[in-house]
Image (cartoon, rainbow, N blue to C red; front, top):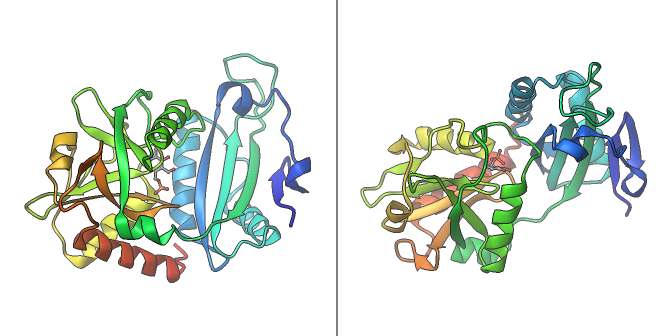
Length: 286
Ligand SMILES: Cc1ncc(COP(=O)(O)O)c(C=O)c1O
C-alpha cells in the first residue's frame, strides 16, 4: 500500500510529495514538529500536543498555517489515507520557502507537512526485560523546551546508543545530572520509593507522556519530586524508566552496562505502564 502525505495544501502519495530546496526547514532546521500517537484510528492527547505545538511556534515566531480545527482535519485525513489504526502521525511546520538568508523572510508562508505510519506495540522482550541506556554529554542548545526540528545532537546521541547496543542515550548536563533521553524523558524511583523526574524547564522537552504520567502518579497518590538527578543517583535507584509517545512507559534496567536495582523492571514502572496503556486504550480525546 502506498503511503500518503500532506504537503503544500495537497494529499499526495508520499513518493510524489516534496518540498522545495529553499524550504527553511531543510536549510536552517527552522521549524518545529509534533508526533501524536494513534490508537484504534484515534489521535491520543491531540489537545496537549497542539498546545505544545503552539508554544513552540510562538517561541520561534513562526505563524500558524491553520487553526486547530483545520489542522485536526488534515491530521485525521492523513491517518485515514494511510489506514493507520495503531501508529503515529508526524507533523512539521517550517518557516516556509524563501531565498536563503538567515534572518526571517519579509513574508512568511509556513509550510506544513504531515505523514503517518503504522507502529506495533514494543516487542515483548523489551517490555519484559527493560532496556539499556548509555550516558552521553548533553551538547544541545539552551532551548530544549522547544520541539524544534534541529535534532543533530539527538541524532548523534541515538546513534551512539545504537552502536553500544542500547535503546536510548541519557544526556548529562555540566553538573553531572541527567537532562533527558534523545527522544524521551528520564525518570527514577529512589531507594526511598519516591519518583523523581527533572522539572520542565529550558533544559528538557516537556513530554506529553511525561505530563500524563505525572497526572497518573497524582491520581495513584504516589510520592514524587520534580528535580534533577545524577547518573550515580540513577544507578543507586530502585527503578528507572523512560517515557515518550512511541515508547510509552519503558523500564530502564541498565545504565552504562550497570544494573539499576535488581536489573529487572520494577513494580512501580510496571504499574505506571499498565495505567498508561489504559489511558491509550481509552483513546483520551483531550
Ligand atoms: C528530546 C525529547 N524529550 C522527550 C520526548 C518525549 O515527548 P513526548 O512524550 O511528547 O513524546 C521527546 C519526544 O520526541 C523528545 O524528542
